[in-house]
Amino acid sequence: MLVTEFGIKNEKVIVLLHGGSLSWWNYTDEINLLKNRFHIIIPALDGHSGSDADHTSIEENAVRIIRYIDEKFEGQVLLIGGLSLGGQILLEILSQRKDICKFAMIESALALPMPITHRLIKPSIRLSYGLIKKKWFSKLQMKSLKIRSDLFENYYRDTCAITSENYIMFMESNSAYRAKPSLSLCRAKTLVFVGGKERPIMKKSAKLIHDLIPNSELITVRDYHHGELSMNHADEYVKYMMTLMK
Image (cartoon, rainbow, N blue to C red; front, side, top):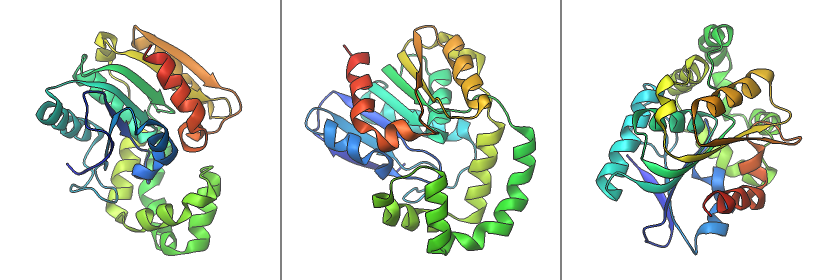
């Protein structure tokens, strides 16, 4: 597994799992706020730019991250955070290993399947994949995803590096994933975030996750869209993190 590391090498290890189609720069501002106090690890999710493996499943990606934490940090880190697809992988990590972290932050994670969307992914990606290398199309995608314009070059470079097969695989995984009952065994003190302007199924997912994880708090972040908290409001994200770890 390939990772990007920031901060100082100490026992205060934070693992951040970026969203689908994104990369380590998902957490650019958080890195700057945390790097003087924490050791920050951002794995390249399977099938994404910078990864050494194609995407096969959320479950397998979780296994690879668990294995990395076992090898590098004796099986436990301070905190794991995850956005969207990264949030789903975090759910799976917590399902498979109840005590892998002391704290967790799950943002905009879909925890219920979307069968109609799932069926449409393969034909829609095959029709639209050629547009990904068009800058005008990438700018439209960024706008729809509420990604800041100053991150465009990063977004464009890394989306162009993802193969159509990997797009199909991780988007199908995303739309088919269901949170596991074993989340009820999770020991991490957890914050579950959902944007106030997200789709109803995302709010329903957030409530399900909160209901499954015993020591969790559900936070609806006012008028934010999907993923806006970590992408565009790092000060607020880090404030939540510091409060969680008190």
